[in-house]
Amino acid sequence: MADRLLEIRISADYPNKPAVLDDCSLEIGRGEIVGLVGKSGCGKSTLSLALLGLLAWRGGQVRGSIRLNGRDLVGLSEGEMRKLRGREIALVLQSPMSALNPALKLGTQLHEAWKAHSSGSSEACNRAVGEALENVSLPQEPAFLQRYPSQISVGQAQRVLIAMAILHRPPLLIADEPTSALDIITQSEILELFSKVSRKLAMSILYISHDLLSLASISQRVAVMENGAIVECSPTMKIFRDPSHPYTRQLIRALPVIPQVFAAPAR
Image 1 (spheres, rainbow, N blue to C red):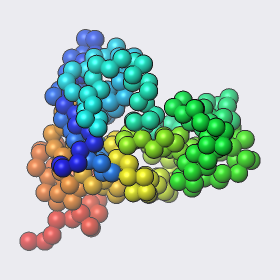
Image 2 (image 1 turned 120 degrees about the vertical axis):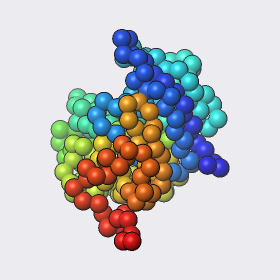
Image 3 (image 1 turned 90 degrees about the vertical axis):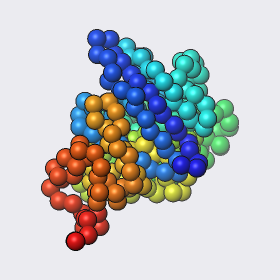
């Protein structure tokens, strides 16, 4: 990969639970969407916490290298990582109603997210918030920003979270099961939104899910995780047509239906 944004090679342990991640290696190019798939408990969320420097908050320890734009993040202090979160790496979680503060208006939360990494004028803040809302197809009117999370739909709440994540246009966005709480129509809309954001802002996305079909709809490549290791990472078409690892083949066989565009040609 000629233009790498992210290069990972790490292992991670929890107290009394070693090798949750076991020599886990992954690369992501600039502007690329990479899907990460695997069963529950295989280490996907541990990987996202490690990237964000949050594993220690759960008692975990990371060994190895996480290079973002050539800078190794492993070993950085909490203060240094706090400067990176939101500006260089952003996170979208699976439960927007839990991630948003129910006691604060949407506008307040968006403005606070902007002020965390910027010290410009109120006009600059309003402009950045407006652009972020436009990028996720949400209203920019004051009436919408005066609402509380309980006054909007779950789909709108997920768009608000995405707007917060892209406020500072970070080069890397981590989406951890971001559609699992949504109905199927809203899932499709959010997946298309991630594709649009990646194209428009030249943003790389690590899209984590147990749903292989969702990953297939937006990812250029798919990485398959089993027992804390990436066992296969290939272009999406190859994953479906010619998977090389036994676990990947097992995942493909478990699908209720393989989309025709990915189906292997008849021989």
